[in-house]
Image 1 (cartoon, rainbow, N blue to C red):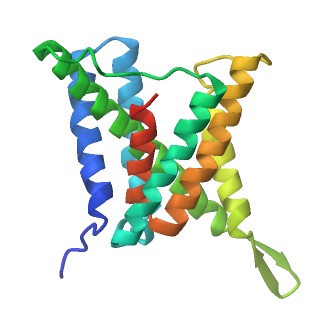
Image 2: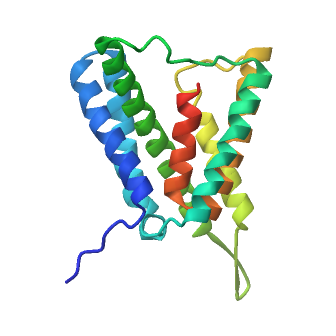
Length: 206
């Protein structure tokens, strides 16, 4: 029997960057909070990649799909408008700094894969739900499935931070919501790989 391969090479590349980066950080920071968090992300990424299913993983990314990655500029610009922090990498010019930069890229790749496969998994679950009305079975519209997926994705961002009704937290929440919508559009139109790449670009600018 012929093996069914992942044809979304963009996703596969970012997955491997995140997986290798996650292994490195888990070992380097074993017993520390960062190490535990990365292990949780790795578990999430692996399970949700499986649950995302072949519908996402076997989609071939076309050149026009990659153009949608430019939509990442919307969350990046919105972050600047909200006055949220931006990170520059000008200081990473030493060998130690380059290693740290590689760790950051690996970690951000892992976060992108874990969060986007989570979004895809929740979308799959919600789109499989149907409501019986007599002999008819009504499925949730796509926009409602994406809304639920983004709502859960947003909620999990506050698992380790307290939600407070202050300007900074509300701005951050609004930014997350808009970012989730943008990433959902990219995933729906272009696939999982471009969504992960856009997420990675957004992460590296944060």
